[in-house]
Length: 72
Image (cartoon, rainbow, N blue to C red; front, side):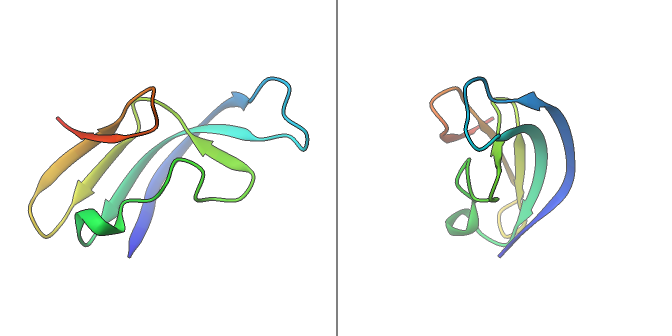
């Protein structure tokens, strides 16, 4: 399970129809298996620099430009 702790909307994805909002998010998850996909929230895409705290391990991950969660 994951929870979006905060989201800062940064605009609209160019040429998206319907429109897709771009958001820098901070996510809390129980385990690494719970990390959400960059497009897990309908109508929104998480952008590079979004962060996730994995509570079980205390690990922090960051979303890169390839939409992958990588260790910081």
